[in-house]
Amino acid sequence: MTLPGGGSLGGTVRVPGDKSISHRALLFGAIAEGETRIEGLLPAEDPLSTAACLRAMGVTVSEIRAGEPVTVQGVGLDGFAEPGDVLDCGNSGTTMRLMLGLLAGRVGRHFVLTGDGSLRGRPMRRVGAPLAQMGAVIHGRKEGNFAPLAVQGQALVGTTIRTPVASAQVKSAILLAALTANGPTTVIEPVQSRDHSERMLRAFGADLVVGGEGNTTVTLTPGNTLRGQQVIVPGDISSAAFWLVAGAITPGAALTVENVGLNPSRTGILEVLEQMGAPITIVNQRDVAGEPVGDLKVSHGPLKAFEIGAAIMPRLVDEIPVLAVAACCAEGVSRITGAEELRVKETDRLAVMARQLGAMGARIDEFDDGMTITGSTPLHGATVDSETDHRVAMSLAVASLVASGSTTLHRPEAAAVSYPEFWQDLARLRG
Ligand code: S3P
Image 1 (cartoon, helix red, strand yellow):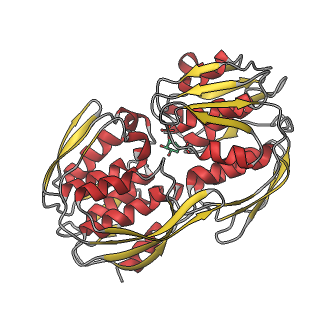
Image 2 (image 1 turned 180 degrees about the vertical axis):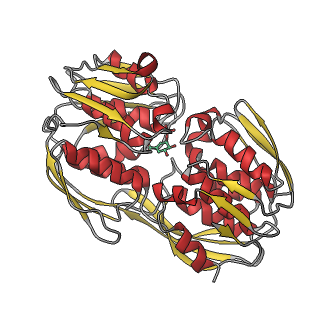
Image 3 (image 1 turned 135 degrees about the horizontal axis):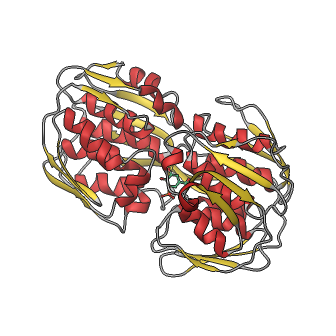
């Protein structure tokens, strides 16, 4: 794909549904009693992987089409049929990790989970180890750390688990397993990760208490019946992030991004952009089905470098690639630390962004848990590659807007994992 440099951006964009909330609406709907109706579900490859896995276990999920509500006929907590084949999670870490938690307690049933080359290289012991503490039996390559993974459903015991990484995927897997344990389970995180599971499980009727300093402790007591719900999925702030940065760095730009989920466990990107001096305003703030939502207005302005570390990382972990692009356009040296989790995302995002943005002239020094980016550095068009990572593809497209000359992007189709209409929206906003 050729991306011309220069020009500006203007207009209004409505980003697709939140990926994290979309997965959860499908999964929780599947284990509830009765029907769940989902509006605004993200019609992208990752949620399609979740839906396909659920269908393979006998759950009726209506066809997922953009702009149409999706219904899930719940089979109840213990209703999954043993699938006749391997469950394919595609590129989706959330599908695989949450599913491990959900399947661990399905007594007497056998499940095998796999995924694409990227997912088969991502660590799964972070989920397998705490689940094993609850009595789960999960086998996989390299001592259980990598898919394909086999789950032999077991009766689980409620316990207290301290997770070493702040990961909503790990926390959610434990909470899903806890639903069928023999007593309460408590998860204690080092820093609070996104809390969509807690909010939605409670809305479905689960007995769940959040506490501890900084909401780092969640206790789920099994026994309640989950009931099918109406879920309205807000737009994904992680998709909005591409437009927020594009608007902030592109001369003359003025954009409105509508219907963006503003859950405080996700809004780190707004704080960093504010720290940079980006003119962003939130309008029309409202509450939609238990999640805060608003419209964001952004325009171009002079930007300052930023510094971020481990404390904020869970609240903007998916936005680091596009923040690296913003840093190239900011005055001064930006510093990202405490970001070692980026090395085990869909790609090693520290290495990939340093390599790909480097090809466009960016000055990036990569280290174990982060990078420094020296701005304001003029970027130039180059031949770059998403390396199959959706967020890298879209971040490089944002970088191309301020590059001199045109950029050739290989494997742009990766964007479809979370934002299938990204390229159409980009073309429209560029006029
Ligand atoms: C997600 C949590 C994050 C995030 C991922 C989606 C989720 O991962 O990077 O895109 O839906 O729970 P971790 O929780 O592993 O950090």
